[in-house]
Length: 152
Image (cartoon, rainbow, N blue to C red; front, side, top):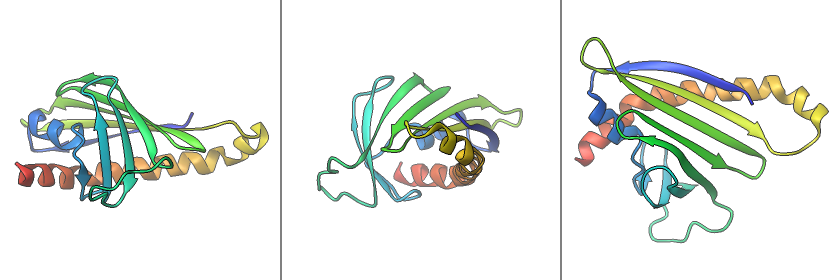
């Protein structure tokens, strides 16, 4: 499975960053994604769909995921099951030297089934996609923190 890892430091403390990155709200305006969450901590399941649900059912085709690791203010890891692949995300938070937070994020993507030869041929493209996804997610970290701070 291709996995890419990156780091971003932000001036906010771990508590604020945790709230912004690990706690799933019903709608994320930064990502334009709605979540339906069941549970708390490790083992929590969620369904996510693009856009706003506005009270509608997410439907059977919605992506389904699970929080597989949960250590408050330190680590959250998720698995998102899609028809053709499984995406994993791991976010670790550490205190930075300047009082801010170091966010280390790892993103992975594993194809489901399919032809092994085709999988090998697509591996380089998949690796690029994982890298681009990671870079985009790290770039959004400040926006997530700002949004969470406004939500209070």
